[in-house]
Structures are given as C-alpha cells and as structure tokens.
Amino acid sequence: MTDAFCSDCKKYTEVVFDHSAGDTVCSECGLVLESHSIDETSEWRTFANESNDNDPVRVGGPSNPLLTDGGLSTVIAKPNGTTGEFLTTSLGRWQNRGSNPDRGLILAFKTIATMSDRLGLVATIKDRANEIYKKVEDQKSSRGRNQDALLAACLYIACRQEDKPRTVKEICSVANGATKKEIGRAKEYIVKQLGLENGQSVEMGAIHAADFMRRFCSNVGMNNQAVKAAQEAVQKSEEFDIRRSPISIAAAVIYIITQLSDDKKPLRDISLATGVAEGTIRNSYKDLYPHISKIIPSWYAKEEDLKNLCSP
Image (tube, rainbow, N blue to C red; front, side, top):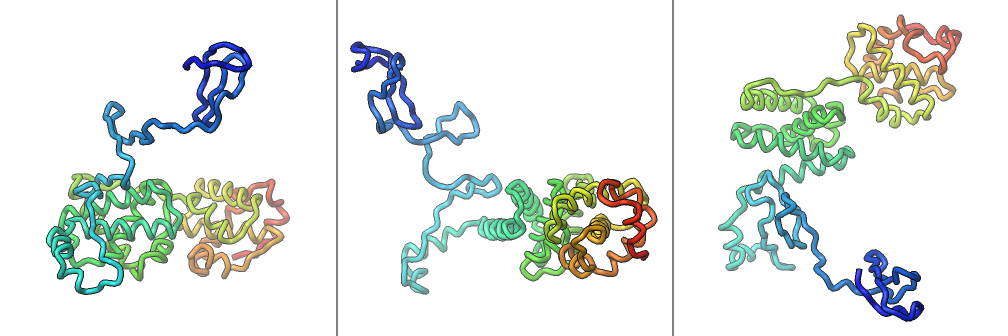
C-alpha cells in the first residue's frame, strides 16, 4: 500500500490498488481515487519447473520432454502460392538439410491426439499413450509394423492403465482403418516389448463391467433412475461366478434394466450402443437369469416384474 491524497478525507491516506479492476481505493473512506489504471509492470508469468528459476518467457508453445529439442524447434513455412520451387531456394535447402529427427514422433503424437479427441479422452490418457509409444519407438524394433494399429494399441493400453478403459471396438472406430485383430496383435507386441525393457510384466489394470456402464447407458438413452439401477445391478453381479467378459455383462444388465422399464429397448439397439453382438448378449442374459432376483435392486423392480421377464 502507498499514500495518496484523498479528496473526501482531505488528507493523505493509505490507498489499496485493486489489480482485477484497475482501481485505486482509499483505505479509510473507500473512495475510488483512480479507475481503469494501466499496469505497466511485466506481463509474463513463470512456467519454470523450479520456483526459484527466473523464466520471463511469454511466447511459444509448451515444451514436450519426449522430443529431443523439447518440441520448440523452428520450421520454415512455404511462402504463399509457391509449390516445388521452395526446396530450390536457400531457405528450402537449409530446411531440408536440418530436418527434424523427431518428425516421426511428432506425426505419431498428432495422430494419438486426434484419436483421443474423437473419443473424448482426457489429456492424461493422451500423454500416457505418447509415453508408451516413445518407449516402443526407442527400441527400434517396430519397423515394418502397422503404424495405425501400433498407435491405437498405445491408446488402448493407456486407457487401461488410467482406469478409463475403452473397448477394442471403440478404439478401432478411430484407428484410421486398423482392424481389431491388428490392434490386438500390436497390443500384445507392445506389452511384450515393455516387459522386456522393464524386466517385469506390464500392469494393464483390471477391467470391470461398471467401467462401461455410464457410457453405454448414455448411448442407449436411459434415464437417471435406470442408469442408477444398472450400476447397482452390475456391481451385484460381481458377487457371482459369471464367466463372461465385463463388456458382455454390462450389455446384458442394460438389456435387463430396459426390459423392466416403461421405455423398453430392442436387443438390436443395445447391441449397436454397446458394440456387443446380439448372440453374446443373449448368452450373457442366460447366465445372469438365475441370479436376477439378487442382482436387480428391489427399489427398481418388484418380484412380479422379474417373473414377467422372458426366460432365456
């Protein structure tokens, strides 16, 4: 705080500067002595790793520790309207001569970012997928393999490790043409390579049917009460020895809940929303049916409603 003359107090008083509004205010009477002041101090912020480090940098993008130069290298763009003659100019020759050794990594990271955005994944999953791909690439053993499948597999593993799993079919839908079989092979290859590097098996994270429920229920268009019942039912189902994949169990539980509601959904709609085949849902329903009275919450459906369900 500094001193300034206040016209209301008729004397010099301590004043307070409000940085958000740009106002100078008298501390005794509250009169605004000056408004919309211009802050002439430095406008930069510190983004250094260490708080004691002086880093007055206010331009450029964030650095990427996975790249050799931190991702802060300069690229000379082609002038507007030029085509092939750019490489014959002195600037073009220098650009070509000093080509970025991380060009392949940058393209791979962009592809992973695009797939992550299309699936609505958070930045931590994208960063984990980048780290996994960098480790695989550093081993120089992925030459000749399907690059799209490799990147999709990195994203699949990252989702598993961050406890936000996605089905292979969901990953396949954004994998630029890579098939489920190719992604599966690439996943096994990555797990093997990372295991050899670390000397121990790679932690993938367990998959539970509850991990998919909210997203699947949203795809089906279920109301909040039905979603809550489905989540409780799928958690109860883990108490029984049902030897089906978590994705199949999730789809079967959603089918049961919709059949008990006023807004019944056909099996085909459940199959399209979850990516699980209709036959697989039927078989999972058959395995769940003997335990249905213990799985479905009593507040959602009465015993009479459960008896009216069609037997598998």
